[in-house]
Image (cartoon, rainbow, N blue to C red; front, side, top):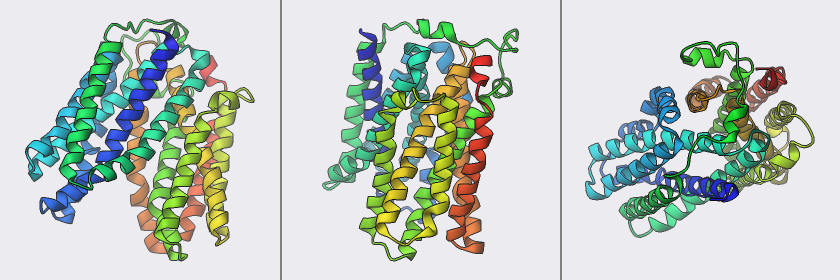
Length: 393
């Protein structure tokens, strides 16, 4: 298959996968309510999607490195298919726990495997461009998934699980036909950097983190994920306190999502203007300024402008950090370094609502945006000092 068509295929499958996951997740608590779950049980069911994968990420990356991405993609999407069938066939709370746990583990494998495969198939000097497009398609799936899931569930929530399961089965068949004969030994691997640890028989997680520039690339991703969860959790509460309607809140969050998606389609062109770490520095810097400026004025038009600029900044930073992690990875270890990055994201995702929940309780909502802005601002300078590490590693 033509390399560009293969890259497009990976992007399209990532789009379908994200649409399936994001379309199902809002339906899980609704199904749990139908099964008479308490609010505490609903929280546990939601947590089962991400709790176990947090501890399995590095192992998943190791398996992907050993058995190659195609196997993990096919097995992962097939597991998603079966996991979504479970609540449809056995509508009981214990089965919902099992379904979400399997779904979360499979999702982890798929995300790492898609990114790892893309890193293998794409030459190093073109990774920023194609990872930007990959993130664009992923964002599209994340935006459309809940809408499609909501439409399907109008008749029955169970139908949503069944239909998305069937779509996932079709994606599995497509991947089996297209990816099964693909060799992962591509020229893209030839450019993987050597490091001072190259003599080691096997890299451990901390060995990979200690590679010059790696910790800062992973930190950049964590800064973005941490801030994104602040935006999703506390920005709606802030807007509500200012009298914004639910429609306006949804529109502002959608504007942020659309800006994130749009900027990724021109990521390759933006990087012709400056080095990756310089662009990453600027994107984190302006995101921090936007967060700090959110409470400055009470105007829907003003908040729309801030959300657009903020979405562009955070939307650009995430794929840039992903490419940095892959480029810094020793040959044969990109799956594991991507897994460490995802683990960092999950930690940031968990820490964000907890820490800022305490802060909002003590000092209110407005200071949250100043603090988050300051963290992003400081993080931008921390990441900037990694410039040049990728080439020297």
